[in-house]
Image (cartoon, rainbow, N blue to C red):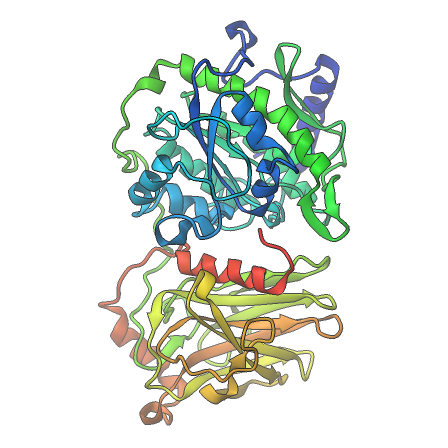
Length: 545
C-alpha cells in the first residue's frame, strides 16, 4: 500500500506535470485520437440529477448551464426534490447512487429517468424535444458530500457511507451497472466544495482519485463514463478542468481545497461567478466526452442484463440480524437485536461539529458492548445518531421507550428523537434528558415526546405510535458549545407485561429468536434512512441541498 507521504509526492508530481505541460489527456483517450469539442450534429437528450446547487447552475440568471447546453445541441431535462418513483429524486447523497443504480428498484427508477422529458428547475428551453430516451445522464451530489470522513489515502471499503472508503466503494459498485448500459453516457459531476477546511484534504484526494484512478483501477474499458471535477473548478480562479489547446487541462493549486466562490458568507452554495466559470469549462469538455462515447462501437449496443456480473462477489453482512421480539429494539451485541439500519451519525454544517457513534466494547450495562457516542457541537450546532426503519413500526402496544445510559461529563444534556414518516412527510418528536455518570435506567413514556420547534406544529404531543420510522439520540449546541460521550444499552419498548423482565434475560431470549431471523444486508441504506437524514438537514438549516 502506498504511504501517505508517497501519495502526496505522487500528487505533487502530477501537479507539476499539469502546470508545466498545460494539461493531461483523458486516460481513456490518448491525444492521437483527436479530441473533438464540437457540438453534436443532432439534438441529444440529456438529463441532470441534482438539487439546489444544480438548480442554480442550470438557471439562466445564475450559472446559465441549461442555455449553454442547448446552444450545443443538448435537450435538457432534470430531476429535483420529489421527483420520480418513491420520490427517489430526494436522494442524491453519494450512498444514494446505489439505490438509483445498484438496487432491486434500479430497473424502475432508471426507466423513469431515461424517459423523463420535463423540467423540475427554472430555466428556459428553446430546443424541441427530439423524442426517445435521454442519452446523457449527469448526476451530482451536493456540497455536504465534500465533508468525507476517514483518511485521504483510505482504499475502497466494503459498504457505502460518507467517508473516503465508503465513497470509493459506491463509485466502484456503479461501474457494474454502467457496463450494462453502453448505450448511455454517464457523467459524474463531483460534489462542490465547502468553506470548512477540516476535511478538505479528503475531498481533494477523493476527487483526484475519481478523475485519475477510478476507471483504471477497475479496468473499465468502455467510453460511456466520464468525470467533470466541479469541485476543483470552484476551489480557485486558477484551478481548471477544461478542454483547451487540443488537450484536457486539469490544474489545481496546492492548498486551495475549499470553496473560493461562496454565494454569501456562511452559505456554501456556489456563487454565480463560480457557476459561470464551471459552465464555460464543462460544456466543451462534455462535447469531448460525447464524441469519445459515440466513437466507441459499444455505444450502439443493446442494454445488457443489469444483474451484477457472475464473477462479482456481492458484499455480505457482517452478521445476520436476529428477529426482534415484542420488547427489544437493540441490545448492541454483535449477535443482538437490530430492528433497522446500523446506527448512523449526522451533523450540521457548523465548523467544529463532530460525532461518531457505533456499538463498542469497554463500557456496557449488560453484555460486552453498548452504543458509544462521542460528539462535539458548537453553539447553534447539532448532531444526531439515528437508527431508521424501511417500513413504519407499530409500537402502539407499548407505553414508551426504555434504555440504560451513562455519560461524561456529569449532567450531560441530550435528546431522544422519534421519527414519523419519511422525506417531505417526516415529523420529528423529542424528549429531553440529562445524563448521569453511572449507568441508570431511562424510561420515556410517549407523552414525554413533543414535536420539535423547527417543524410545523412545534410542541404538539406525540400520538403516532403506530407510524414510527426511526429513532435517535440528539445533541444541540444551544445556547453554547459542548462535548462529551454518551453510552446507551438495552434499548427496548416499555411493555406492561414485560416491564418486570430483567435486562440480564436478553441473551437467552436473543438466542431463542436468532435461529430463524432474517439475514438482511447491513451495508444497504434504505431510502427511509436517507430520507430522515435529508429532511433533518433541511429542517435545521436555511438551505436545501
